[in-house]
Structures are given as C-alpha cells and as structure tokens.
Amino acid sequence: MSIGNSVAQVLIDVPLKDWLTIVAIISAPVSALWIQSKLDERKEVRKRRLDIFKTLMATRASVLSQDHIKALNMIDIEFYGDKKYKKVREAWRSYLHTRTQSQATTEAEQIQFNKDCEGTLTELLVAMGETLGYDFDSTHIRQSVYKPQGHVTEENYQMFMRTQLVKLFSGEFCLPMDVKSLPISVDEVQEQKKLRDLAIKYLEGKLNKKSD
Image 1: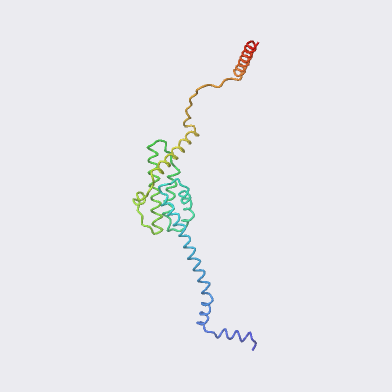
Image 2: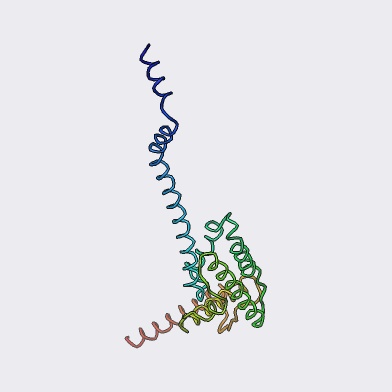
C-alpha cells in the first residue's frame, strides 16, 4: 500500500467528532478576529453618532457656529440606512426645510421663523437622543441651556447685518448720501490754476518793486 493511500485511510477512519474539533480549533481564532472587528466597527459608528448628538446639544443655542453646522451636515452620512434612525433623518429634513425656505421680510415673520427653527431643531434632538439612549424631552432641550447675553446680542447683530447686506445687494434699499460739495470740471480746474499763477506773479512783482 502506498503512503498516499495509507494517509487517506487514516483520514477516513477519523471520527466526525474529531473532525469538528479540528475545524473548530483552526477556525476559532479567525472567527474571534472577525467578531472583534465587527464589534469595533459598531463601536466606532456609535461613537461618531454620539459625537454629532453631543455637538448639536452643546451648540443648540449657537446655531450659526461652525461646529453646529458641521455636525448637522454629517447626519446624512452617519445616520444613513438603518431603519432605527428613520425618525432622525425625517426630523433633519424638516429642520433643513425650515431653515432654507424662509421668506421673512418683516419683524413678525422673522420672530415666527426663529420659533419654527427652534421647534424643528428641538424635534431633531429629541429623535436623535431617543435612538442613542437619552431620555430628553422637548421642554428640557429648550430650557436647559446656558447662553450669555453677549452671545445673543452678537448673533442678532450678525443676522441683522447679513439681512441688510442681502437687501442692499438685491436693490431693496440704497445707502443714504449727504453731498457736501460737487466735483468741479476740468475747465474749472484749469481756470483756477491760471488765477493762482497770475496771483503769484502779481505778488512777486509787488515784492520786487518794494525791494528796489
């Protein structure tokens, strides 16, 4: 009997239980690495989602800050696909629509616009918090926030300036002008120069006569 046939016969004689044990021993490290990589991946994804939520919560009273805007723009990426986050995506679209469809032209309309933005942002934060394990209601999110009055004044000033610049460049109003004097023509400039030269010559002649 050849060596090959002998090895084959030995393998055939190995019980199935032993084969399963061998396969388990070989595949266990590979399976463990695969499972660990999936767990690490899920942990990293959750961390990014938590970072977005924490940033939005921390800046919910400063919606013009770069950190706030950056976090909002990451929602479509980090909360994509999973049905668990459908409410988050719907709330984000609602807030985005409110922000971008404003046609406020009066003070009353601007006040209503601000209220609508605050309401839809609150709904977004509530939905996001629920999916991430936080039990924050809308009242808590609106009221439990600290913002110095100086920041409020600065943001209102920036918003006012942006609004006025848009109106200026769109032609809705013009800058007031108070003309103190009109520019003179080229001929008038030449005449004034001649008069000045004549006056200088006249004064020089008077001085020369006195010196004689």
